Image (tube, rainbow, N blue to C red; front, side):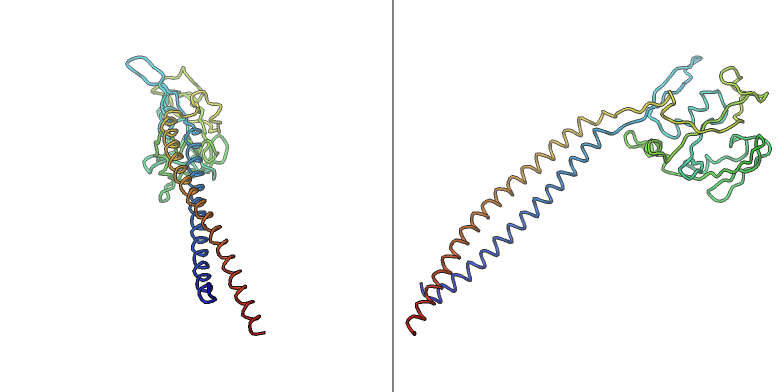
Length: 280
């Protein structure tokens, strides 16, 4: 092979090497993307199999008898249940956020007077846009409370409830009010239902210690989550296997090109040496 032909062959081999190296990098990048996708699939599966759901056991009047009923824990269910527990006209539970504000899902849930806020005389309720300020004196204590609207509390999702997550991570705190009868004495079950008015002291309660709230693993979606995980995993692994095969073929071709490249280089070097000997 002449010097010119060898040089042309060397240029072709150089271009081929560059093309194979580019294709190898491209495949490596695609396999990296697949690895990230597989990690995402695994994380999604772990979340779905480890998710929890809070349930609320409440009293429901059916005919003349009270019966217990278990429902998904939502803001509305908890507040409505607090009325029936003590036979109160108004809720005896409320929710505060991490900033100490009392949260409600809509403007219609904001208190319009002191009684609806759980207080009696000496406390005033003043509206300020979408907020309500409750202030005054109650049982010789200074009162200042702020009600705000959190429309996400209307979320009633069965599996990823905004309210439930807020309780778990401490963004929401439950406060309970002592229910008093007409004489002003605290009363639980003996008071006449029609006469009970929630005027007393608010105090925080831990949801984990409330017997009517249970927090258990939600397993209804586990079978579907497993099927989705297995399908996605099989798809990703099949694509990765094909890319692995392509990568091995490219590596084999690259090795062959490198071997020929070195051989052509030796031929060119030999031609150059022979040419110098001829003119020396």
